[in-house]
Image 1 (cartoon, rainbow, N blue to C red):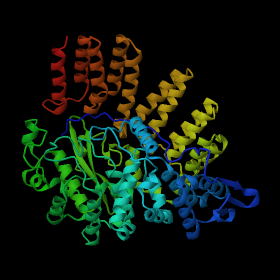
Image 2 (cartoon, rainbow, N blue to C red; image 1 turned 60 degrees about the vertical axis):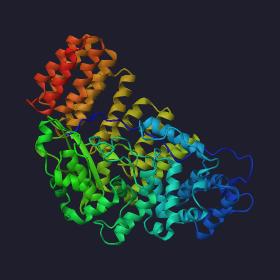
Image 3 (cartoon, one colour; image 1 turned 180 degrees about the vertical axis):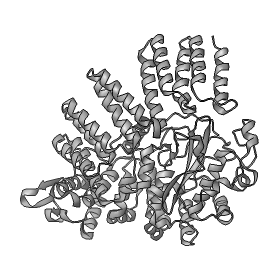
Image 4 (cartoon, helix red, strand yellow; image 1 turned 90 degrees about the vertical axis):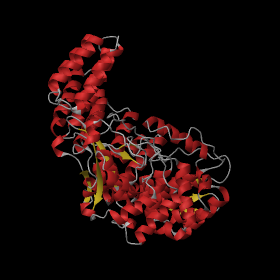
Length: 619
């Protein structure tokens, strides 16, 4: 059971990591001289064109690093940018090392203040802020490169695989000063161990860069019993590397990626408790789901509506001994997994007549995402937090995790094309950007960023609207295995159709998506109905809103459950109440009670009764 809202926050789309190079007024400027067979810096360094067909040599990296130590990364960044573009135009498949070299220089040359300003804007646009985050950041003057020692800089420049993983993992919502600072702390503590477990260090950096939100890992236990604090980064790195080296970990942590390891390190459970779990809760990895049912379910708390933890200790040992409700079972099982180096997720969702929590874990055969989920309740969706951003995961992100296709060579090539499409776009070279974005989606149609860049560049290039709509339809077909993505591009399509007056065609597309998702993805069907209802709330008078509500409820709400109530019924009832239409609000709620599947005494029945009571007291 849980009491938190079911509403999702939609993620924004951001282009990060690349910025337009400003003209240098001092220092040495790089120049491109392809006609002479070189990409040269005017004075000391010369990058020959034939170098661009292979990764930078150790001598070249030493030379660039030495130049940056003398004059700063802003001196070498423009030349590396031009070299990266030249490498791509020469042979896209071989451009990644030069592009990542440029990205290191661009990142380290970014002033701390500008980096924090860009990060703040990304957080605000995504709705990713929370009460535990700092309101102000006291920043030293200088650039981000000062966060990383020359020794670590040189290691990062020379490790091409880690560079690829770093920039593929880094999000615009990662606090850049903290991410680099954490990497430096872990490296300084033990450089050799850092080199062996660099992906683990990266996972810690992108999770520990900001504190977790106050309702994490769930909001049904007091912060006095479960402080929302992550361990110190160096302590966390030592803990999991020692465990892995001791052979206790169920997965070999050196073989997992940072994108997987972030689901191991995202815990505030004390290490002493994790060590207790290692000794006392030991199901085989393939049977980790049984950790959920080891915790006795407390029906007495359910019948008494005691959803918050009632005892004075929330240790794993106490939960196992005293039992709990589903959120405690899910928390226990997830922490047991992390204690053994297993990536785990805590899910919560709405079923036909109640709310529930379960967990997921990375098994030997891939992700298991329904451990403890009640199949007979037909829970329409499961929501879990991404510990890197502390926002709700989208469904396709979870599927992408399990499919692991982003490690394939074709996807990496697709990602390079998307990177260069962004770079060309920012330079105003829209034809080049369109070609690169098209190459990205041709190489790997599941590359969402490729489609997003292609759509954005087509808009910037002011291509005919119908051509843009055809691209949206193409993206929907390519991503139809991922319903939330199909819906995302479908919403852009219907918005475009409405904007040019094709209201009936837009409405037909809305209904097509509702019907398509009604069987297998009821949550997305309900969200589509919610969007239709919200449009009416924003544009129609009360009478029109009531007509739309009744039609949607009659057609799509029959035998629906608590998710439909959350997403459709409550917004309408509250809207009518705020407009002073209390009798209409009461009638809307009563109509929903007659239409939805409401079982007497269950949670939906209780929530509807509580809302009816509030309406009786309303004027």
